[in-house]
Every structure is written in C-alpha cells, then in structure tokens.
Length: 111
Image 1 (cartoon, rainbow, N blue to C red):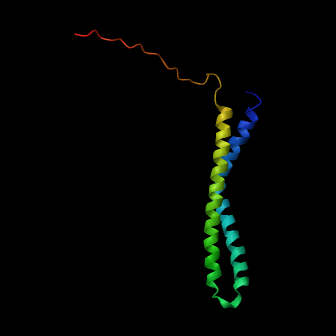
Image 2: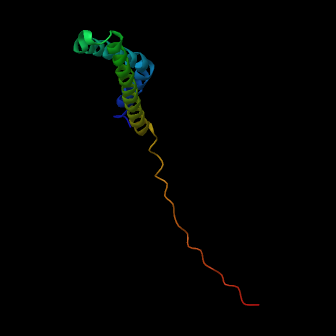
Image 3: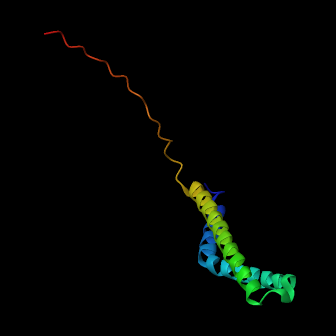
C-alpha cells in the first residue's frame, strides 16, 4: 500500500482542484471560442450579413463548446475518482462469490 500513497494524494488534489475550478475554465474557454468564431464568421460573411448574425452563430457554437468541455471535465473527474477509489480501497477482504446450494427434493407419500 505504501507505493500507492503518493498517487492517492496526487489524484485527490487533482480532483479537488478541477472540481473547484472546472466551471470557470469551461466558461472561459467557451468565451474564447465565441470571440474567435464570431470574428472569423464576420470576416467570412463580410458586409452581406448584419453584424449580429455572426455573433449569434458564434454564441451558439460557444454554448455547444461549453457543454462539450463540461462533459470532458466530468469524464476526467470520474476517471480520477475511480482510480483514487481503487487505490484507496482496503484490499483486506477477498472478493465475494455466490455459491449455489443443492436442495434435495423430499417427495410426499401418496395419501
């Protein structure tokens, strides 16, 4: 159990940090996606479209990016929590196994 102890602490710190900051990071990354995409779409549409259209399309894709980033963070946190649980779990008891018992049928005498 001693070699796994540093890994357990590292995983616990990672999970706590990411769980505390994942929302801010996801929103910041989505805002960056929105800024970059709205500028690129404005340059692509040029003056043919009103300026609000690239901003709204960029916001739509930023919302999708925010959702994808949140899902990726949730998957990462779950992966680290699972590894932490496997390392921290007490290995003292063996795995439980079901044992099928044979039941003898007793026949009744005819009455």
